[in-house]
Length: 189
Image 1: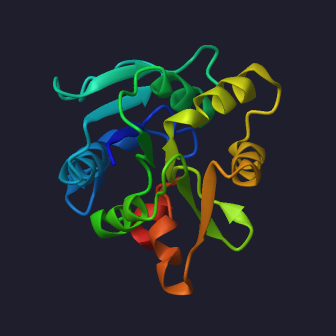
Image 2: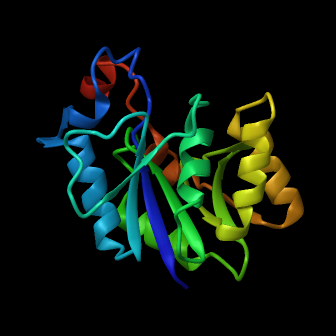
C-alpha cells in the first residue's frame, strides 16, 4: 500500500482568536507536532492544505491551496486529491493533537484495496482523521460542485458505495479525537 498524507490547516481559527497552527501545545507548535507524526508514517508525499501558503511550511512539504471559494475541509481534501500520486490519502486536521502515530498506523493497516477507513464515534464520522482511497476523488469533486459542503453526507455516501469502511471507536480511544477550538481547550486537556 502506498499512502500520501495531507495536513489540513485552512481553518480561520475564529473561535481560537489566533492561528492554531503556530500555537504551542505541550511545548511544541501544533504544525510541527502534527507534521512530525505524519513524517514518521513515511508517506510517499506530504501536503499542507490551507487558504494561503503558511510561512511555517517546510520546503520539502508541498502547499496545496484550497479550491476557491473555500468550502471548509472539503475544499482542501478535493484540491489535494488532484496532486496525490499514491493509492490512499491520509487526512489529518492540524487541530487534532491527540491522534497518535500508533493510531494512524492502525487505521493504515485496516485499508483494503480500493477501500479506505473512517473512524466513527457512535453514528458520527471523524473525516479529518481518516484514509481515503484515490478513487474517492470524483465523489469529493461532485460534493464540492454541490451546495452541501458538510463532510458527513459525503462520508455516508462513500460508506454506502463501499469506498470507505467505518471503524467504530472504542470508548478508550474517543479522547484521541478531541480538537482544539478555543483557548480554554489548551488548559482543559
